[in-house]
Length: 596
Ligand code: ASP
Image (cartoon, rainbow, N blue to C red; front, top):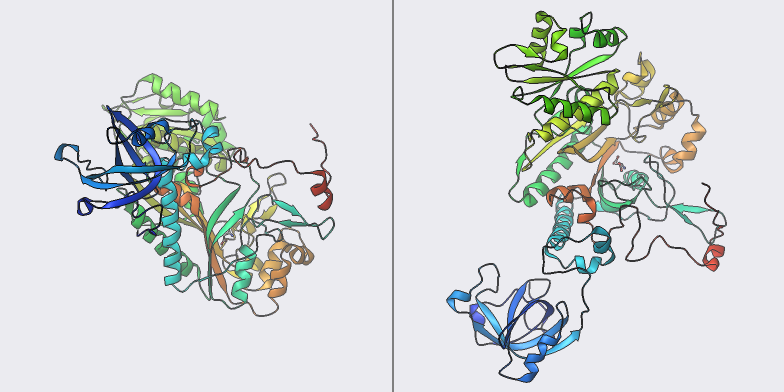
């Protein structure tokens, strides 16, 4: 980086080395640290690029001694001479560690008060304070590195996408509702009384319309807004690497995005390892084997169905539940037979705290015998069946969950994660990816159990119109949707879209909505289908999730420069905030009292 030379600086604080010895230089920055060594005052001067040590010799002039009157984080400009450090005082950790600057004069540009957050320190500060003074927090090394990573990843993605011939198209932020399944943020219109804009949950419709417009390959690093309940892996506003392509099939989109992701992860992975073997797992397989549709493949534990083993057995509880059509899921943990009884009891307590009846288990001792309440009630043939299905070796334990199929799968998924984590089976130094494909197109309505639209209404059913017309059971119809998963996080998802209006209308018809609903919900797309729509598909990746994984952070807010807090408030800017009566009037809004 070459800086602009002017009255503030001739060099950055990262730039000077032994070749500059003897030069007179001007540097500007923040006082990072200050130490007084009996008349010699050492200042670590910091700018965005690095740190240079500046020495103020009080014996040279009283003016130089006055540097001591300034607090750390004050902004100063210094002029001085570059001096080589003696062998013992070289600092190999600094790019400028072989020299220091002997100050001749300095000027204070801006004074710092006592700081609410220390910059040159590893001390931990509460999130409230860090967010209120984000501009100070951003000076600290760790957060600054995260944001630098963010900027680098954004830059890299733009370069990859441009290199592949994708057009970056900006789409509106003040728009109509796009149905991604979350609540919209609304913006009242001043001009159009009683009408509202919605902030985009994603640019979905616009990117599809860009394909209809003929742009062939679209991408955008797009801001998205979703008024959802917050969690550590959710933000109200976030960025997507949004992409759409024309004349493509599912595999084309998947391969293009996988290649993008491999490029980005390989470039920024640091000392982590990447497993480039990326399986395609069907939704059904994911639920059966991992109990979740975004499996963490770093966890080697798998789930097996063992309902048949318990059918008609003497273990009455499971036997009667299986007779009523329930499932029994089993998770084997290798080499745990030596664990004390208390370990199993604690897991049982955990299962109860998760709302399960408990967590049954069998211990397969090293000597070939078995232990535990379930084992006592199973004959040897059944025990052997479990050994076979679960691949048990002596010294293992197997845990069981019995419930209706979906509940049993989901709970076994939690058990798998809990055991994998507790037993430290997950390699934290690895990135493991997979695709989940073949999602069911329709869902069961939560209350009525009837056919309902799946969560991606833009997706085309696999097999198109024929599948919709001829499926024996509509719940068996699959969707052209795909999700990309890394270490148990859904990095993104997308789909091949409806090729014709007919399938879109038919899907809505099947869940009980007429064509007028399609017109109302997807008005622009509905119209567009009458004027030549190329087959198209796309995907969107959550940028913050990618960066969070690359920075090894557990919380998305750690990779956002100016995030709102966990309750969606920005305490630094004071948002959301009340507005004046005048503003409300102009927006034709009246605030209602809260109803408790
Ligand atoms: N718009 C979708 C989403 O935000 C992604 C896609 O289907 O391309 O999840």
